[in-house]
Image (cartoon, rainbow, N blue to C red; front, side, top):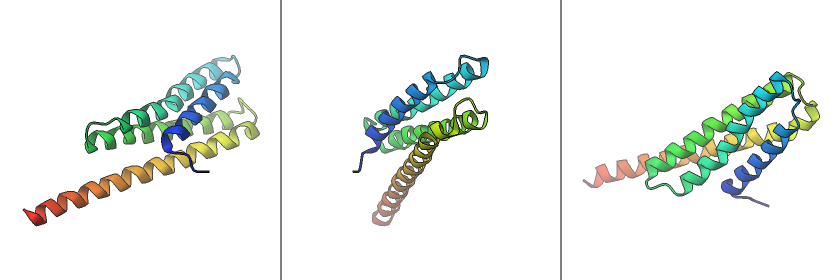
Amino acid sequence: MYKDIKERTFEFGVRVVKMSEQLPNSKAGKVLGNQVLRSGTSIGANVEEAVAAFSTEDYIFKMNTALKEARETHFWLRLIKASELLKPSRLEAIINEAEEIKKILGAIVSKVKASQKSKIRSKKDIG
């Protein structure tokens, strides 16, 4: 069943919180846990802000920020996996979801930007 991006990024944030709690209580575990926790939960927060944007430019800015956070989160998750701080099998699904969220957000940003450019061109043709 299709979930909207707001719900999907919220659920992803919950998964990141739970995963970060499973990291070892080592220096690396704490540092990487904090990094992935910040960026992973920020994705949904920025999507939520985008939904309440006061302009198309603000919407694009917030969605771009969410995309940047998704890219960063994907990096931290891959680093955690490569560092073997958790079993790779525990990270596969969340890494795949981070990749999917990146693709969705990228498509949203591209579509809105293209639509905005089309509107600008139309206004120039009329004026």
